[in-house]
Length: 424
Image 1 (cartoon, one colour):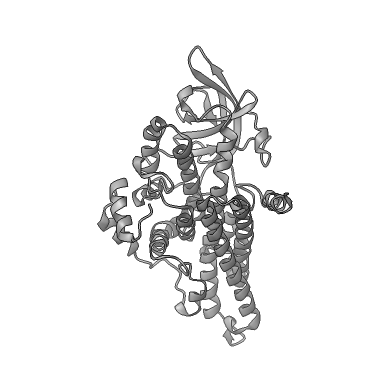
Image 2: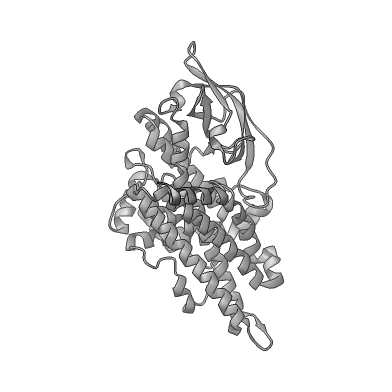
């Protein structure tokens, strides 16, 4: 969607989703009763809409309104009960967020990476784990849109975009994490039936057991290919749900393939292009996960700022202490620098700039490191209250920690950045 005004965006959404104009405008006006009550004074310094176009501001405000009314009021319950909110998740499809990067001919909204970083940031202020799951869903959708045939795109994407079908990305294996190219799950072609026979396992798969479809990277001879495997396929099974530190809202399991047969027509692109396909999604994935950290940091900063203005010790507000002000200044700087880096990297990725991959790695590293630090500093500002689940911050801290590991560990990000800097 390259529209100039939000009204055009509304019209486009009416064509690509079941959402009506009335519902969309109502969504933008959703009550913010559950949002943090933060004094406007001071907050304008790190307002997430600073520097955004009118259209991108509307995207952010829509996402933030949905986060404040649909995600945040329920996030603690979802986390506590390890419950994935399928019905709420499907509402993303109604908003047009089920195919953010997918072209319009199959019902996508065709937004840019620069649009998406603001949308993801706004949603993550409400629930990090649910938002992260949405970004994975969109990574799969955009992969199919980019590399699938017209037949595959028309067959699979409408259900993915509408959220009638949920989809997971299967790359990591027990023996291949950062070294993704060493994956060992095999797909052997059976010419007699024109099928691939898959054997192997994937680990740490978000949505495993819940999703309807699985986009699987597998070894075809000496090369890597990508195939789509439906959940009901014989021989496909799932391990027990992992007991995690954070992201409890979304199920994470091992995915096992034992003589799993899928039609050769379920292969994306040509044999041997799977690694290229997998890597093509990582730059955008790194921006998404950095934006999730940024949204969490924004939410925690708002909670902390409100708290220090109200909390009194030694007969005055703790916001009046210079130590508190210095810490707030550091936190604000981390939020703003992360936001600017993510937005610049997104613009470069949209442009196809040669420095885009390194910039995405740099933005991901800085945003996830600094986002976690802001959340942790906010917890410290609340003292003992910050450690209580009633005050939410501890959940953001737990949810954000994994962002420094997935989509390429931050150590791998440093390797990518350093290698780019010294290349000849």
